[in-house]
Image 1 (cartoon, rainbow, N blue to C red):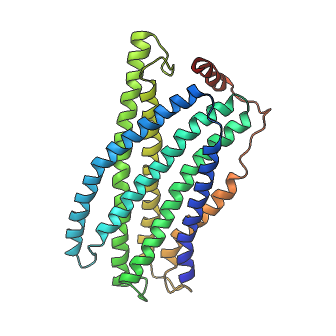
Image 2: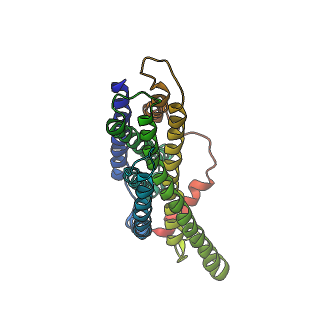
Image 3: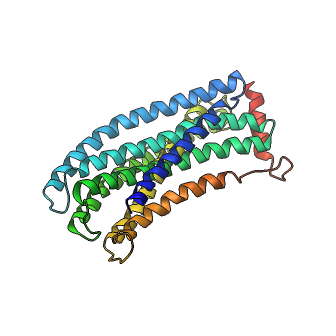
Length: 318
């Protein structure tokens, strides 16, 4: 039983190692000419500036909520003040998941555009690899965080206790703080990033298309950079944090139900608690394997309008 519990965070580590390897691969790809690199740098710097400002405000929220949560939990016999620590770990992990997704997106976007100028297959490989970095980064962090924190809390509150004991109830109760922290950051990251995205998008439409007659994504439109920054912080960083929170909440909710189940198994009654984490961890390995089968032929029949759109604006940037 113990070996299987330790296998869960180990799978999370494997997912993060794969994420790191693929991130470095994307980073090594050609980013195009100097003009393309300049514009992509503006977008990356703008996105990071937004995240830093957002994190600064959210850090106050996390500290205040953690203190209140720890105070209330200390008065609950079925909980413990360490739920505040679990809350902070969940919040930091959620923010990190969004950061990983946005970091690779700002690198993969321009490299995909450059690859699309010469090779459809190469463009798909770069874009899909960038997306897999975010997906496996979210899953790896979730599995590593849940698995590791569960082992620590079980050692603190329920060493050798039965799965349906009061000690295990306290363990699961404290573990829910991890999910609460993740969901809290996801809420603000998704809404805050979404507001910025829509404001920048509307600005690009009004100022560029309506007043000056410039297409929305034309580099001559002064709101283009802000629009692309908004897409990254809202649709990538915000979505990454949102996916992380939903992923953790789904697995943890099943663990909570499993703790209430009486099971006669070979794992001391822990099978209903262990199973959700094992399914999530095995999913990481299967996802890594499945990425190896995503390919496209250079002669594939596709709608080329989007490719020509990219090439057209690359000529504008040169």
